[in-house]
Image (cartoon, rainbow, N blue to C red):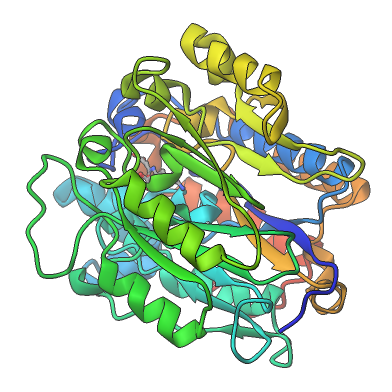
Length: 445
Ligand code: SUG
């Protein structure tokens, strides 16, 4: 246990070269709405890098999580496709396009789904604990857990400070989507916190809605148990929120320090959630709840604008929190009015800034989806893999790398192009050097 000064580091997923719009996520309205459109992977990765650079320039420790290998030929071989790499990809697209599309998705970019994290201030053994998410609800996302585990173990390798667990058993009972459904509140980052775990269903019930409830209570109970996480509060998502397109809680809720900012419909029982958080925080801090009503911001606008899928930041030299929202929240008149009112109200949020991550937004991934938050003490920060920390020099190097290797146009049918396999492997081979990931990091030579 520690209450020494600590920082919230951001680990952003570097958007991969196969970023595309295949409409793979039922319940995610943006993904369905952009199905079949032509993507621009180069613009996507550059948008992500610009966001990372902005955070680093603001004084936030910023790290890069490398893309995973896609197309995932190992997966296609497991499900019966044989022959050369080109044969495997082309036959899969010909005879089982749903499997082929899943194998090509760049969805590991959404690092908020990479893992659930318990900082050392909250864990019984004083280490930072990670449980990579199994993401079993959607096939394309279920391919991520193994590589995410591997990747987090590279970045957080020191066992004296970090424990990167295995994902939970990969079946619906333990359906887990990681930090997208977890909010940590605290007096300050290094002090013990309240860990709010938001679930969509219990493992024993059938979800009555039209869209899947992706997170089970049992998954979060297991994670809280294995991390020995203090201050645990379990809250049920509002069914209306999931039915309206909030497939993760971070589409309608974000929290930092003492502030929980959420849509009125985020939770099944808001007053119970407030009472449980207050009880868990007693003696530590007084939580501040900022709820936005349905009349000020209808759920449909919250989901279209992604106002809540923002990064709520503690910045050096700023008294109040800064909300880094997607540009779509500025363009939606209702969301913009809410943002303006927040700042004027003299509450915990002092400024709202905007960032353009449109390529990711079109698949339902806003600024908050692209990053995994990890609270680190100075000693823990020093124990991370330094080559993955974003500096101005690394930013420039990664921009040049992306411009050299990424296409600026990718239609879904282009994913069947066997040349894409070589292109991606060449790009990732170069990235492996830039980020000093080691020869064995990727499963190709
Ligand atoms: O799981 N979209 C992702 C978006 C994840 C957003 N993350 C958070 N809310 N934290 C998903 O639905 C769409 C991919 C496609 O359709 O090609 C996708 O997987």
